[in-house]
Figure (cartoon, protein in one colour):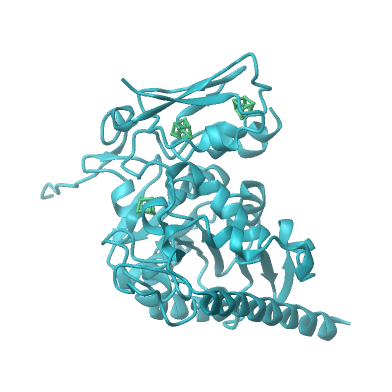
Length: 303
Length: 83
Ligand code: SF4
Ligand code: SF4
Ligand code: SF4
């Protein structure tokens, strides 16, 4: 019963909600609510979750939810946390739960403002790497060469990597996470909830219909993203970067699984050429390089 | 004071009804093989598996995604065609 005790039995996301079979975000939301508990308010901009939360007068989650316009999630949460502060309530997690479109594209201005002001909120971006809810249109977070309905030959630009953009606001806590590693995600959430100020967690959540893979492969795809080095698990606490989970052992490129394993399991990369595959590998190497530089720079400063 | 109408939604299991009806494949646990590791419970996106003394699937809500069967380390879950 080890993992049952670690994660906790209580289910705040309830079964019978409208998420697609095998939905990565639903799994992520289930974990997040387990970790944060019932003293949590969710602020949700337009995204798949707006549907997953269920039709009025029913709700799929056992916490209060504030549905808000695409661009306004972080500022709404900021206002709410200020109000709770004035009321003397420091026992409530004010949490933005937003998709990648509502974070890296439409919500970035409000997010940046809240980060700059160091508002006391947890911002969780669940990244399914496109606008899934409206029909798989590309977002800034879609990776290079991935098919979407608006990039039928594959996206030309690389993925906008938001965690480092948020980190450069000098906020107390930034982390990445994956639904394949719930213990790592839950630890990060608990840490975030214990820190005062702006906390950002970027969660990788594969999406079967959008990424074109069968619904039973969601966790496998998420795991392969980490083990091939495509998705890197880390946390940045007060400017110090630390790799976490399996990513700790993947600095040496030879220890990573071949990227082909992650690419070939998804239909959205079916069309790619050899050259395009190389370009994807290059993007991954670049990100590792940046993160390693980021961490060593900080470590040198501390010494 | 004027009455204010508050459109509040209440937490409900099955907010869109019995999602078990969506299933085309049904996960069936072979308890003779099952080691009670609860990995299937951990990875079910639907929270449709109960962690009792053994994992118990809530067929009213299980959507038949197959993640539990794919992740079970001893392959104790079979996906069977719904009839
Ligand atoms: S489209 Fe993708 S992310 Fe959205 S509910 Fe379906 S599986 Fe989940
Ligand atoms: S994952 Fe398999 S072995 Fe583990 S509890 Fe579930 S059915 Fe049993
Ligand atoms: S098939 Fe999917 S929804 Fe059903 S019990 Fe298994 S993991 Fe949960």
